[in-house]
Image (cartoon, rainbow, N blue to C red):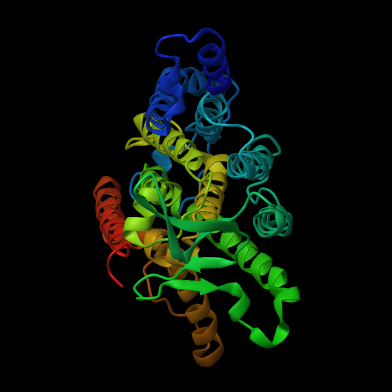
Amino acid sequence: MLYYFFDYLQREFDLIGAGVFQYISFRAGMAALISLLITIMFGKKLINFLRKRQVGESVRDLGLEGQMEKKGTPTMGGLIILSAILIPVLLFAKLDNVYVILLIVATIWLGLIGFLDDYIKVFKKNKEGLAGRFKVVGQVSIGLIVGLTLYFHDDVVVREYADTAVIENNEVVREYEDVKSTKTTVPFFKDNELDYDSIIPFLGHDYTWMIYVLIVIFIITAVSNGANITDGIDGLAAGTSAIIGLTLAIFAYLSGRVDFSEYLNILHIPNLGEVVIFCTAFVGACCGFLWYNSYPAQVFMGDTGSLSLGGIIAVLALVVRKELMIPVLCGIFLIENMSVIIQVSYFKYTRKKYGEGRRVFLMSPLHHHYQKKNLHESKIVTRFWIVGILLAILTLATLKLR
């Protein structure tokens, strides 16, 4: 909203300084700052409100050190994360941008699913929360919306350059056309673009949208659940998400600019620059939440936050066309997810074969395995963050590693 207000002031009154709102870098910085301030300034008020309402975490005794001390810690802190993302985005981003609209819808949608889950757990005293099938329906639904929008919307295009060039004002200018495309980035390969049209060529172009939408649904569901599983100890999910969000902000900025995308030989995606503002608001919200969520946590994000964070990351990766980098960039979420799958699968297999279940890990998800090995949770979180930073650097290195 502020973008349109200051744009009006510049056009009509030539107000000095109003033009600064035209710069994505300025608006992105302001979005991060406002997001950070919202979480820090209003986080304490939300915590006190949740305490008064007795919105506390119910803890199941798993035999982990310090676990029962967390009983009664306010949950549903994801509300402050969502507010700290949405308010700066509404203030500083162009609200007619298809990518921004899509991200706002995904944030609210997944936030509502998580809120329902937390509400049932806290107020209905049902530890299971929202039934798994309803969560999946919600995730599939937003996957359909995101997939169909990205595939069919006229503003979702990439820029393709012609082999020829023209001379304008004594400068060589390459001719280009903004076209609908199903291309995405493949990491570590020289010709690093994959066209979804070519995945199953015998089906033809008419069925490509089905393949694409199914992939989108899988990615959103997997990453959303991965973030949800990772949210098991203080600060882990929020810190990891901030690292991933900052990496995606860099990708969005590079792909959104003609000069950088041409220099790096990556896809140029028109109008993608506005996504940087969403990314910085996202990072600011995660970092601000850590003010209260780092060990010992004064508030938990609950499913309201964790499902949303994972879903937002998935949609961000899809709009910047870096979804095939998710296994690397979101490696923490992946190993947490895989540790649960491996543990459950192996337990069932050995129980069927030997009559008793055996385990690969002391406990899953993986962070609980290290807790069982008597590592303090703050040390586990810090080491997971370090791994997350290394994975983010590796992901950024794919810009040149081909």
